[in-house]
Length: 478
Image (cartoon, rainbow, N blue to C red; front, side):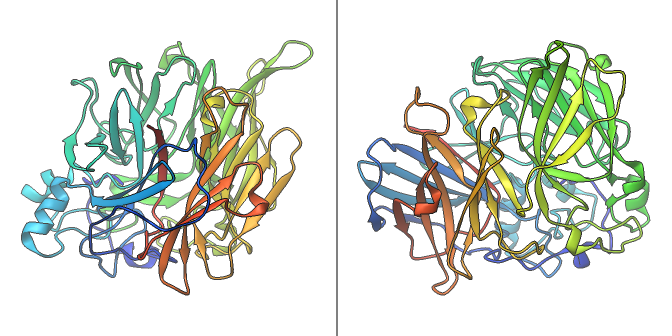
């Protein structure tokens, strides 16, 4: 979340109790974890996961706040080790030295000016972790990437790719499987809570080859975006940002559905002035499964984007502080379609599933291309805050879904796909996810056959402690 913001009095009502959401107070190394079942011999590498883990939790703690903590599961030769470390940002170091909380539940300093404000500008690095151009980077959307040593998880500090980056950097950049380049954006850029946005590209060698700024139709929290072979999509949805509102002690981010939804579509090699803004019914999407292009029988070009769509966003209120409806604050698969050769600037939104869930993932070798296999964490009942209880496998060609649920009370993380081999057909490989065992108050690492999730895990790696639910992760092959 952006850090240079006034405090406001709506943080506590927005906080939610999370299943397995409490922080753990230690860092540890486990060299040899017990394995039930058999780990695939070809599964060699490291699963990295990231999520908020505040050193000094508070009653006002927001789901998106708190120091980043990385968890690394290294798999090789049928053995698994685990290591967890806090990301040692300036924010973390200041609180460690003080021995107490210095920031509010969003990570904003108390007071909002002075030396602590500069510390907060480094961010919490608590949302995602990626590998690009030989570097492991912890991400959160309001600040620069934060470099991590991949073996020890030692913190190296903010990383701007040789001075090519400035301002916010998304937690969800997109890697092009053909070129190896990384596409990224930022919102609230350069001024927090503004309609300013940025877009850029980093080549496979780590050189920033493009960095542009533009204005969106209104200031919005833009958590994710979409990339196809030829276009970039910027979803500007009515979870709005407002500095004047924040200055009055009201929510800096709030739900304003009367504004409707906007999605900017730009040719990848075009200028920001070429962005065409499509309009649609109000809704919110934190995460995109995938987007791709197709031509109809007459040759007309359209773009599809499969997203996890909320009728109303969870965790954020209306501008006056009233809460949104929890019954409408769960996400389901939805397909957005944009007719690029059509005369209308409206986009359509078609539901694809009745299953509630979040954290969609694909075989990343199909990113930006027509795809078939996708997975996401799902829940038995569409109730916000219940936690994710299983994995859904979505067939984007047939529309069929298969589901696997954990025992009642247990919860699962985002599933991460690992291909069986670099040249394996799409979707042939494994899914890795952490599972919280509620009855034992500890976690496991589960390994599934990606197309056989209903058979249950082929291997279960047992930990003696919890891995908090966290947000996102990635596999880095050895």
